[in-house]
Image 1 (tube, rainbow, N blue to C red):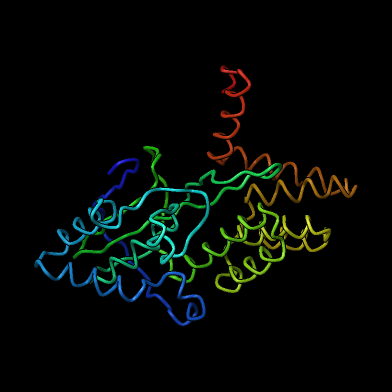
Image 2: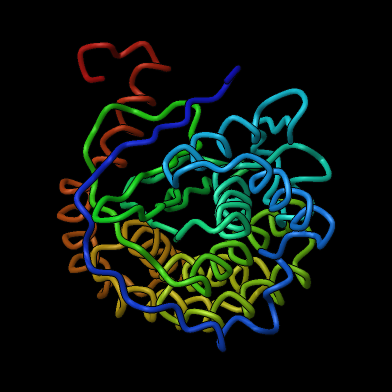
Length: 291
């Protein structure tokens, strides 16, 4: 599979909560297969009888084969399932949503999975964006198989959890909001973050990102409110801590700085992603011992 690694790892099956589809009705088109593709992939899969694992392997081959979907990895923007298949490219979230939709169409029990591994995925003039990594899980009997579409997957263990479809959609709107904000589309970004929060109010990055947007739009009080909400959900969320600390310094609320600095330092010491970024900056500056 040129340019992309797909891992199919058999793991012991953990308990999975049922998906509540009612919360995703108004946004379900994002993750829905076009009818003609759904019909054609189902017919192709049924043409040759295969056991479930062979059917899964067949689907992975079809994703990247020249005479199949011929998908390629592209991190330029987050795409819907229909866009991914039409344009034949997508990032890890777009690939995962597409894979899950195709797997379900051919009768496989596929779910979205969120990992604690962060990805550096977009940068504009003064903002570093990073997001939780997503992949897919297929249950076959008493085992599960993980399909991961990250080209540069590091060989490390990380905690992961099965998530409901609506959280995957919340990630989609959060990603699109960050992308539109980086392009200067602030009104569109605000609407996208609002959709992400409505779908899953527990998605910390949506609150943090909307705080960045509100500050850019000249609303420091709104930004503070969003970052404080993010920290209520995750007290060690490094981006929200960093953003709130910078805001208090900017506004001259220096009495709040020492305690927040201490919290940020403690969180950064426990955050492997932050340590990676520090090492990367040291390496770029030629400070190899520090890196």
